[in-house]
Image (cartoon, rainbow, N blue to C red):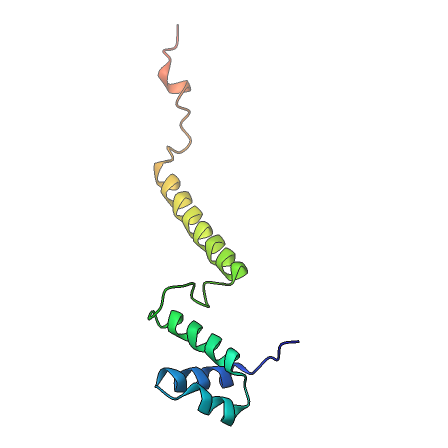
Length: 102
């Protein structure tokens, strides 16, 4: 079963790897497997824009869905505000177009 490390440990390890520190030195010091550190480094490079791929903050589909819902709610509010500007009030457009016979 994979081991989970605190986010701070991952952040510090990624900073050190991106700064040029050797992965094998971090393996010995932190006791984290080489494969894990290489995976973290690859994702850190993607997040930094130095490598193509899906950024970690974009990978969460639930978060992306929440962001899209918020965008749609904001858009709906703008449409409601715009439609309120074009309302004609209490005047019935059909009633005012006919001439009364008398």
